[in-house]
Amino acid sequence: MQISKLKLGLLIGGPVLVILIAVAGYFIYSGLSAQHAENVEKVEGFGALVMPATDTIDPNDPASVKLAPSISREKLTPTQRVIATLKDERVQLLEEAIMMRQEIMDLKSQVAELESYKRTNERYAPHTFNEEVSTVHTRSKQLLATLDESKRFTRRQLTGMAAASAKEYRRFLTMHKLVLEPEQIDVIVNDHLPPYAYCIGDGIDVAANNSREEALLVEYFKTDKTELMSNRLKSDLKAIVNPCQTLFAKRMDYLIR
Image (cartoon, rainbow, N blue to C red; front, side, top):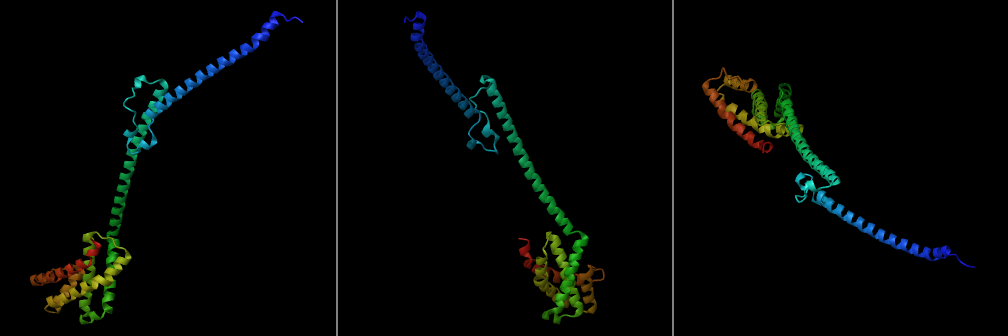
C-alpha cells in the first residue's frame, strides 16, 4: 500500500512538533518561575523596609516603626504608597494610644486623690467626728473607773481626766488628719489615753490650790472655757498640759511616721 505524502508528513512531523511544544513549554515555565521568585524577593525586601520586624517595635515609642530613611516615597509604586500610608496611620494610632494611656493614668490618679479627699472630709464632718470623740470620751470615762490606779483621784478629777483625754484625741487626730480604723481606736483608748489622763490628773492636783480652781480646770477640759480663771491658773494650766501632750505624741508617733 502506498502512503500519501500528506500522511507521511504527519507521521514524521507530529512527534517532532510535540517535542518542540514540550521544549518551548519548559522554557516558558522556567522563565515564569524565575520572574515569580524575583517578584517575591522584591516584595519581601520592601516589606522588611516598610514593616520592620515585630521584635524591633516598641508600643510606647511610635518612632520605632517609622519608615526607613533610605526609602523615597516618590519612587514607590502605587501599591507601595498604599502600604506606606497604612504604615503612617499605624504610627499615628500608636501615638494616640500612648497619649490616651497617659490620660487614663492621670485620671486614675485624680480619682484616687478625690476619693481620699472625700474620705477625709466625711471622716472630719462635724456630726461624724463629734460622735467618734463622744464615744472615746464615754469609753475613757468607763475605763478609768475600772482601773486600780484611778482610786487615788476624786470623782470630779476623773471627770476632768476623761474630758481631757477626749479633747486631746480630737486635737491630735485633727492636727495630723488621721483616719483610724476601729481597732486602732481601741488601742488608743485602752493603751495610750490612760497614761495621758493620769498625767492630767496629777497636774490638776498640783495646779489647783482649792476646790474652786479644781472645778475651773475640770470645766476647761469639758468646755474650753477660761474666762473665770486667773492669769496664774491659766499659766499653770498650760504648764501641766504641754508635758502631757508631748508624752501622748510620743506614744502616737507610730501612726504618723
